[in-house]
Figure 1: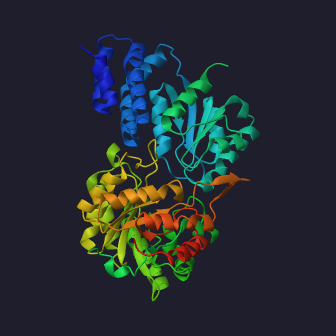
Figure 2: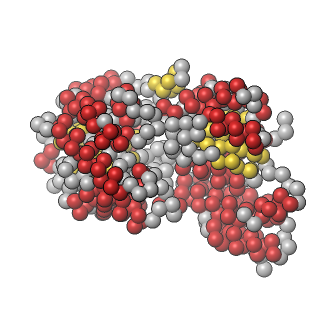
Length: 212
Length: 290
């Protein structure tokens, strides 16, 4: 008997194999994909976020849980697509040109996927033009930029300018993050949002995805 | 009794400042791993090394922070050895007759706790790097976020017979006093002391103001000398350029508090340069080892 409680715990504990197996079991027994997501997966990730805020979980735990969530979503995703359920939003994410740091960006990408977003991850050292192309090709509503080096923060500004020049700036919300990035900087370059950590980034993406 | 006893002469030792940004002023492209310049532009690396030696440093590091085969990428074993040997040689030449050379070993960049790398892979990479750095007077495992990775690196480096310093970044958690993986200064210090480190420390982070309490906690948690190398604050973006608001004088003004908190080695990390080190040196001349 599939037990959503044990699926919840598998995600909380970062056990990707078990999370995937339990999800398969639940689906095989006829549980609705959306029920599995809303009754087990989302509460699990909310608890992960709470533990991060309380300093019980740190970055490694977040990453492991996000991966377990991703593994659990694998069998569910095609069923959602087939039944016409829309993702929470579509996000193009990457670390900007000149910057190779990707741990934070990977964490945000994993949490966004866990949170029901479709994520197009462009990797690191991404030129502005690639962000533009990804937006044009995917119709994404959010562009998430990461930078860990102060010398590469200006690439965030040039990426926003490139989106503007390509005529797609108005179609997307741009959010920024990374250790040296601040709200002030985000405001200066005309970003639509800034978040201090990965869990806040998902909440921000959700807020910005709500119909106006 | 510490491996460094013969190094000290009545006051904390002055270590160097940032190398990456110094190399960028000499033409290094942002985002490029500076360690490659040990073979591509050794003369420019030597210039940075000399500038710190001439600024009065008791210790200069090496341009080898990312020269382990994991950080360099697939199949880089031979390159890692070459870059590390060249890095030590460059610093050695600059240091001769003036100061000691401590060779820098940075993190692998992969998350052990998330299974992105195995303990064996880390051990192999760090052992390979350490073996190529034996021309230095000591080894520095720095900017570590994960105590387990740090201890693996430490155990891989100890067979060289050199004293090994292990330094962490404490900038996470509500009070910004833990590593990214959640370790406290107490946990980090206890772990590396037990594993055989000759010194423990903190570097990088969010600016020098946070370091006196960190230093005091490290000092209280073990019997090792404490290595302190803070950033010159977090930068602000002004007209599209990163500007570090902390001035050399402001930075150096923290020295007495750091010495009082037990710092045995004092220098600067990101955002610091020769001017910062000179100012720090002037302050240290007035301090005695606490």
